[in-house]
Image (tube, rainbow, N blue to C red; front, side, top):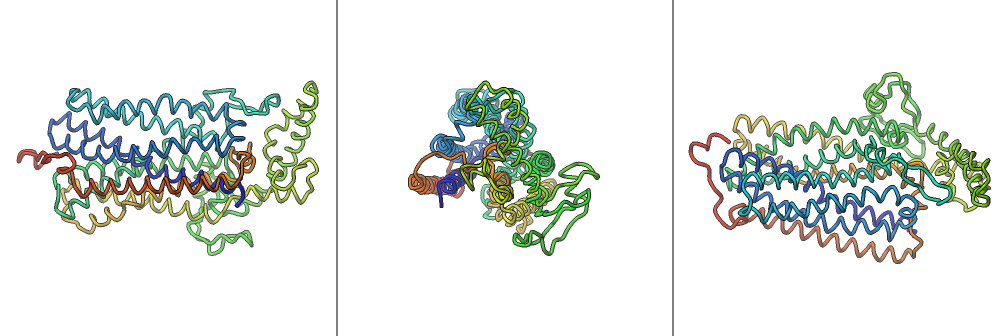
Length: 519
């Protein structure tokens, strides 16, 4: 593996490890706010105990998320130095705001949440809990604004004099439609993760006949919030699909393994076997119109196929070569206004010319074969995207069914009488993380070969360092992150097995007989 593949692998491993902690933090933060709101409104001590118990598990996960997130961001400077130099003026802004605003807000309110129960009034502590939840989601917002810009770079332009991308419109970066769609979709997936976690652990207690009052109430909250969140994921995922259909057509075509443009509206392939050698999808089972409606929201707009998009890429590479030639002239003579005008006219395709760097350094002498090969690199790994997307979507519908059943059983107060449902809830515990990781694989793997869509090829963004150094740090990060994950799992299972009574160091408050039939 060369330095590019090693750098990609290291960032992928650290990012996927980090996102094992993020969705649970997002989901539990809101659930804690809901539970404490009920406590403040009802005054029942059992709801306070629920907040403290689930808050303990939240705190363990929160600490691990911070530890893995900080080290991950350092890689932009160590492994992706040219990327940081080239787009740092744009990409660095949301990262800085995330650190200055959201991170410090989280650090402040997480301290109040854990250590100010006896120092604040009920209302004051409730405000601190909701502020913690908002700050946690706010942190995700800035990260996803940065990532959304990588998918759809708006509000910036290439400055030939500095040889960098520079921000021209911060509001365009902030309100990037791709970033906003990714944010609401991602946080909703986090809410599903938190709800499944609470549902599964509560089911574990009911199966063992322990902490029944706390478990029943926790399952009721998780069922209601989880059902709303799971339905939101589907709706907001549709918005993400529409954004990709507008701005990342190759990603959509690869997800569908659609090799050639179909008559509008395009059909959706439920299952099939992508054949890379033959550039076709065998044994495909299709549903008419669905892809066209998702990707274009119309019945007369075609969704381009992979082969047609490769042809478009070849055309853009040729245009990019014109921009590259003009760029060289401007670098030699900054006062060459004709060359600047040519560069401005073709600057949108400059990144496509840079794809040729993978095949030869003197890209201005590229042959038709080089152009064809460079255009072919715009095809991401079709089977990986095809199956990752379908497994993710299938899990999403399973979560809707699970939460819908839980909501119905909770409404009829029959949660404890259906042990098969309790087992299903418990066994579902790891699935939200699988769905979340697959979602990131679709988002990031589907963007290849670009680190910045249509602007900077991934192969050009790495640091000028030795591959051995990257391999050494890769092994170190893998071991370090694995240790953190093992510690997280150990602590979570320890306190889950102990239960709320032992975790809180006192018997959990039981509801009165009057309240036993209510909330």
